[in-house]
Amino acid sequence: MLVRRVLMLDGFASQNLHPLMTTMQQEFICSELPVLHLRSLELLTAIVKGVRRQLLPHVADIALLVTEYLRKCALPELRIMVYSIIRILLMSMGVGMSLYLTQEVINNTFVDLDYINSTSGNLHLNSNASIEPPQQPIQKKKKA
Image (tube, rainbow, N blue to C red; front, side):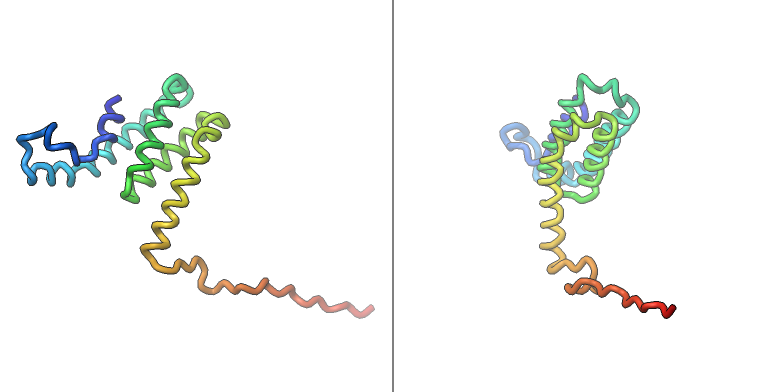
């Protein structure tokens, strides 16, 4: 529950909730949130690694938390950490977890790849790659 509460903070709370908070205080909180989120993800990783199969009654909540956070998270370091948590969940929980998380992981992977393409212009994975198929080596017949 603590990890959920920290990860769901976005720093842009309504002024009605915090009428005495100045803009400078809100900026400070927003600047510290990524570090706080990173530490919370590290805590969640430690919990998942340490408890593994005993986490079964709570795995649906954790999967929901991870998918919600993956949708709203924009920082690459935090997204990588979320993907590593998903990997640990998949390895420890098996096929049932993969059925639940597959579509979400695929959708977010495409979002990440689109982001990479848009920030770097045209992405060339292998600039030496040719469109033509590689030629087969010519085999010489042996003389008998």
